[in-house]
Image (cartoon, rainbow, N blue to C red):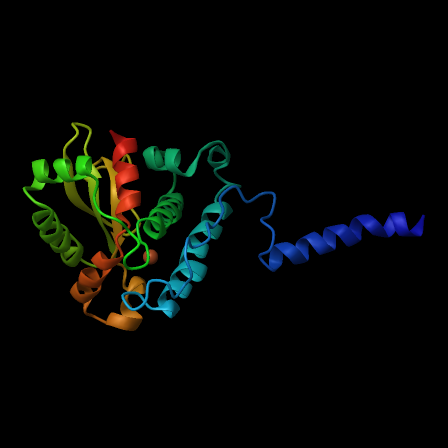
Length: 233
Ligand SMILES: [Fe+2]
């Protein structure tokens, strides 16, 4: 009898310990931090392991935790996928916009990178669309680099597929993205997004954002960009 009485509080305590240790997602946490799809040092030397670890384990984790903290006061969040949330972010408070955007943006960011030599090449279909919209892959890269380097303060550079099927380069501030239903945002389906917040590069590159951007191209996971392009068509 005593054992049965003690069992429930003991299990509750053990569950809490596991949650605090980060080993188990709490039942109320609808959004979860995805693991990196490679080791933290797999993108060396372009992006160092310390930056990757802090970026994923602290910055991205904080966006997820802060978004989950918004569920109590915004119960609609429980019925929305992370992607669906982006398309109706305008009806939520700015804390949901910043943290929901931060969670989606970083989740795609990890997936559009791969260790050097493992990202494949643009598919024939994607290359045809790139040539049609920009003239060449080099022209796309040049325009993208300008958008990424020219974003004042913190934000993102994007390659998007617009509703008319053409491709375009755009840039957003803070943790906004092209899926969001907000004024001033050029909307479209993101095929790839580059994080140009200082937390993404400052340890290795300090103020040399263009050097980070140039090195980042060597990490591009074209296989994932091809998949996103095919899914958006
Ligand atoms: Fe970031």
